[in-house]
Length: 226
Image (tube, rainbow, N blue to C red):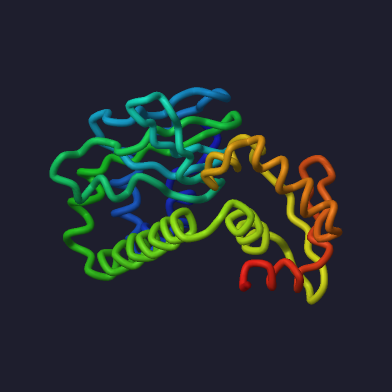
């Protein structure tokens, strides 16, 4: 692989406090994995020995129900680490599945090797606690959005949080399919289409292929405040 493991590790906050020798040790127990579009990285319930750093591409994290349904919990983009929490579980199994949405490359990091070094680095302990706490806060916010707000609120809130805004208008490029977006927001695909059509008809936004133009930011903000 043309990638430099230590340089990739340094870019992530979970590794920034480690010395060169510690990074070299982690690198020795890490390996790249190239994934084709649609390839499963790990399955829900699979025994977990590694966590991951996404080097390139997009990884879908999803929960599957016994009825066969799927709920997309998150989409991991380039430069993001994921599945770190399994290091601290007694029953080390992945609670979600991970699938490549597009051709992707991830760095597999041996959890036991990382834990062994972590025990000697209080600074990094605090960093990973901070990251996991931030993720817990985000998950609580997601639960709040899913249980207390309707479909229109969830979509508008997502668009406002991900768009590049000025005072009046904003634009975002939707890097995932509308089907994935619908699952992530717990909205039926046909309902999502109706909401986009309704908001477009009201002159609040315009959908242009993968680009969504928010034409009236203040009115959209008011919509989720009311």
